[in-house]
Amino acid sequence: MENREIARLFHNYADLLEIKGENPFKIRAYRNGARVIENLGRSVEELVREGFDLRKLPGVGKDLASYIEEIVKEGRFGKLEELEREIPPTLLELLTIEGLGPKRVGVLYRQLGITSLEGLRRALEEGRLEGVPGFGPTLIGKIKRGIELSKKAGKRFLWSEARDYADDLVRYLNQMELERIVVAGSFRRKRETVGDLDILVTGGDGERVIDHFVTYPRVREVLSAGTTRSSIVLENGLQVDLRSVPRESYGSALLYFTGSKAHNIVVRRIALERGLKINEYGLFRGEERIGGESEEEIYREIGLCFIEPELREDRGEIEACREGRLPELVELSDIRGDLHLHTLYSDGTSSIREMALAARERGYSYIAVTDHSKRLTVAHGLDGRRLLQQIEEIDRLNGELDGITILKGIEVDILEDGSLDLEDDLLKRLDVVVGAVHSKFNLSRERQTERILKAFENPYFDILAHPTGRIIGQREPMELDMERILERAKELGVLLEINSQPNRLDLRDIDIQLAKEMGIPLVVSSDAHTPFSLHYMEYGINQARRGWCEKGDIANTAPLPEFLATLRRRR
Image (cartoon, rainbow, N blue to C red):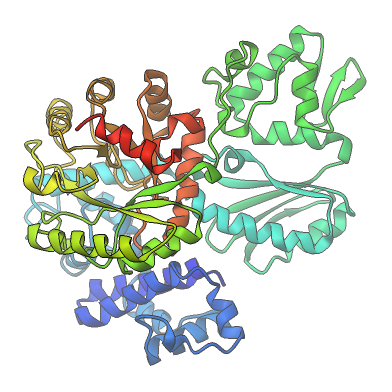
């Protein structure tokens, strides 16, 4: 039982409680418990097995501890099952639609009897939301767009969620002592969402491997089970296909099943031009197999260099290979500092000291504390008084801690008119000012673009955070003239962030590639709210690699003096 799954059960329980209209303190307890679990950094299942007293975890009391033990030991959460008999669990589907929180879902359920996305679609078509208190034309329009977005997204999983299952499946399959196990497909290409998982294995008896695979504990349904291939559906609906391939076909199968389809079409065409044929079984000249054991061998035989999986999207990688300008992609180990993280001062869960020590353990030499500014009241944003208090604490900690420098920063709101949420007299006292849009996402393309361009004019504005404002599968990117924004950022020396939150991954890979081509420095930041979520940096690095970024394209791969010099060119 993964931490993510236990946390999901608590989140679901809290959502259903709020839909029902229960005590907000009770709801908050379950939400806090869920956040503690998903950001713990250690397996809760292991803690239970070791007999650890779960009440020692922050925010976990006697009741929550007993429920966690029940989930781990019995695989069920009785309280949630009771509530689901009272309130349709399909109501949780509605929470994926922008503009619908638990309270509004509760209104739709009680007043209109809506219990599912399909029911909501029908109610919209019939105009039944009009006249419901709190559901004006703007909100109804937002809900309609959200439903269209959910249709387009289909059933896909964040890369981070798929990764948890992929890692666990690899560990499980390793019990068979196989030669090689690799997860291919869009997962290997590090796409932000994954439709299914394709696993290739070599070595071992194919039938025994399949028998082992279909008895994986998290299987909901076995779709097929042959002698060399099998398909299963996991508890969360993720389909996993496994293929046992011979050693001599491993590379060709890996190339074929990694994709993308567009990249593979070009590779096969190049092979045909040389009188060769590539398929999942190997590289052939007529009937003779001349390669296929490794991807490197296949690329070499058709006159190409090895192309990293993240680049295989038919976006110029073949031409770059032939011209000797394929990028040497940035690595997670290149990062020297994290420039966007939150603490107890706003909506984080830990102190500045705790975040700094956790960052130092990850090998970073600097961080920027960027709690929210006052406009974001839901996140306990900082006004001038509290910001000055934080500055004093950071100065004190920098005198006490070795091996890590804490930069004074803020995530300041960009208001609708493009002004910033704090005065210049405060901003100029900071080392790093990260600006972000947190409201009015539906402005026109022209107004939204002008809003950001005006914010850039402030001389203390350093980094544009999560630039398009998207939330994957829930909120579309803002309408922006990205080329104008990038051009102005280059002129003024504004840096753009690749936000590593797994449901943001913002900038998008195509925008990252454009920024790189224009020579605009980028930063990759975790947007961490807990010490454990500092590891989100990996997801941002995945996105940077898909955008062709090298170490030199990412400003926070530089030592602190060099990074600060980059910022101070602006000021």
